[in-house]
Image (cartoon, rainbow, N blue to C red):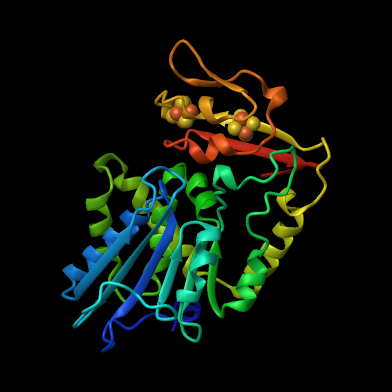
Length: 313
Ligand code: SF4
Ligand code: SF4
């Protein structure tokens, strides 16, 4: 066994030969690609000869609403839904949604693969003040990793952004998921290529490889230390609402389709549409860094950066 294979042994692969169906629950919020992940898995299982049942609830079809999908595959599958405590794998594309669905995971043998990305519904913001704590989830990554034995928390959004494909964080998670199932890598890539726009196949393949690589090289102790350090530095985890928190907006003009949503929903009226129908920040001094524009933009064209005491996110 080479080094990589021995590291892979850290992730409990779910046997596709198991008699009972394999239950995979995929959760997140609208706009993240939960349904794409679910369809890739269902389609792949079917291509490999398994009986598959898939059910999904889109929640609000808009970006931000809860979305979940149950995928069950095996030699024989009857019910399309997974019972509480019966999921073999829980894949969360959003942190709080992952925590909300944790009771569905088999507490003894289940595997939790989660993006650490926080997407806070605009109306859950109790305090929009500069540097305010959102109060959305209090549980930190190390706390959750400690309480769930087979847990894998990765910043898929950051990995995808570093690859230059920020919209492909769901494919990064598919890469991580691929290490927990005994399906051929080539088959994963082939199916993924059918569910993404043809011009993004290469980018999504890179995102898949990056997620897979991350999972194969996963080391729990290193990850726990890394997340403990990050948690200490996260401005959202501090209670200091001092004015030294600085927010800057990055608007990717090429992705802005001029829908006006960010302009309409910015509580501080900081944004406007320019003559080209591209969103621009007109009043940076008023911006509280609440991230509502970032969460609501359907095209992921806005990224809010906050910094405090030289720590930036
Ligand atoms: S930045 Fe996003 S939300 Fe704002 S106008 Fe452009 S596409 Fe719409
Ligand atoms: S520009 Fe965005 S981050 Fe700044 S206040 Fe408006 S919605 Fe919030």
